[in-house]
Amino acid sequence: MKKLLTVSLLGLAIAAGTAQARDYDHVRFGVDIPYEPMEYRDADGELTGFDIDLGNALCAEIGVTCEWIEQEWDGIIPGLLARNYDAIMSSMTINDERRQTVLFSDPYITIPGAWFAPAGSEIEEINEEALADKSIGVQRGTTFDSYVTDNYGSVANVSRYSTADDMVLDLQSQRLDLVFLEFIVGQVTLLENHEGEYQVVGEMVTEPEEYFGEGFGIAFRPRDEALAERFNEALATLKEDGTYDEIFERYFGEE
Amino acid sequence: MEWFNALLADNRIFTPNTIAFYWEGLVTTTQLVFLSLLVGLVLAVPLAIGRSSRHRWISLPIYVYTYVFRGTPLLIQLYIIYYGVVFFDGIQETFLWPMLREAFYPALIAFTLNTAAYTTEIFRGAIKATSRGEIEAARAYGMSPGLTMRRIILPSAFRRALPAYGNEVIFMLHASAIASVVTLMDLTGAARFVYARFYAPFEAFLFAAAIYLCLTFAILFFFRWLEKRLLAHLRPQSG
Image (cartoon, rainbow over all chains, first blue to last red; front, side, top):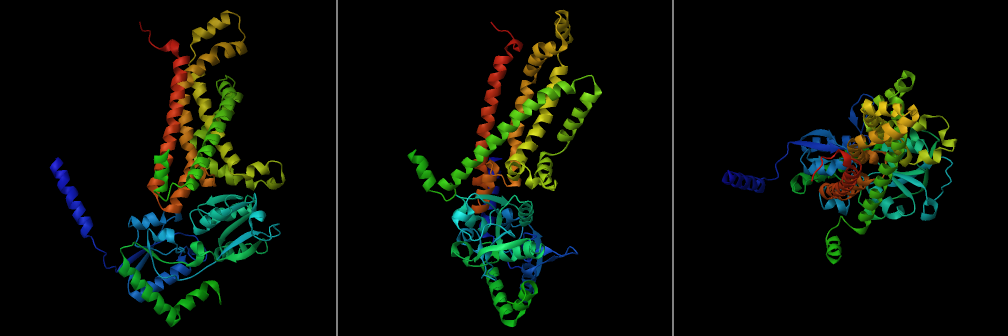
């Protein structure tokens, strides 16, 4: 019995060692929704958004079929490593912490973070003094969470939410004094859906690079270098032939 | 302590920073569980007496309350109370808001109501199990029903309820792990934070599990000690 176990473990080890990065003709993307306008369901329940359209265009360019798999944000990287899907295209900011675990494509968009507060908020600019004892909402485990925790965690109360929606709900019920999120997401969920009730406070945040600088990338398992390279080439092509600009304008308007 | 410092210096997860998060989480969990159990216990004693009353108009409402709170998941109760309080118009202008605004108090209310429901039923069972003979003896001594309750029924009921109540305390500790869904930085919240930031699920959650285990053992030993003292008369005689 023991011998059998040893032999089968050995066999497993060899199988694992010789497993190679395979050639993909079908790529499964992990995506966390809703994150308007990056990825969300439209009124008909169809998955849509900037990431989705760009991802599908990239797949078409490469000649592979794409599938989108929903996954909550705080388990999205373990899900990739567990092979639940082959890539993550879900507004993921490229940073060094993540680079230790996953392989990133070239950045495909850069979006600043912004502070949102109810209209008429007494907070006018963002610094330690103004944020003292204020309640700040962030999405748990995002680079925005890290940024706020590291810079203002000692003076303000940071509340961490699983989804941007929960956070917006608590901002509306006055549990939060302000929220820190991607400008684009805040623009849609707060400024456009509740006209006149909310405002951007302070400057857009794009620095330091440690948190924001590199933009969003598609994440792959480290061994799938060939796949990442195919996506990088496709991205370059789409930027050249105008497809990228067309998708960009569909969601963000003219720049 | 040197080996401990060396251990800390050797990894990127358990830095003084994240240890502080775990500590904060431990404090929040302990406060939340201790306070909800305390208030729940205080509520449960009169409720259990009322629940064992022969008058239906006293026992029925209490039965409905315990039935509802034991019949629905604590997570749902927490959501309803946390998000529900803001649906009262103008609650933000009342004196209650500074408390309800924090996630701590809605969570405390949910946990307290939940544990009070379970504890009420535990005590009711113990009160009902009081032997007729003790009550008849008390009556023969001329004790009023109130005095009988205070001197005869409650003390023996509490002792009988002890093992079951000890379990309830441990269940409450474990159930408190859901507090992080309403942004509370309890032990589980700290583990989720460390997990999300370093993508290290095993380290983050194993560490939290170890702390929960220590707390559970502390509660277990406390109740075993208490049972030894209070239930001495029930143990088989030896020697």
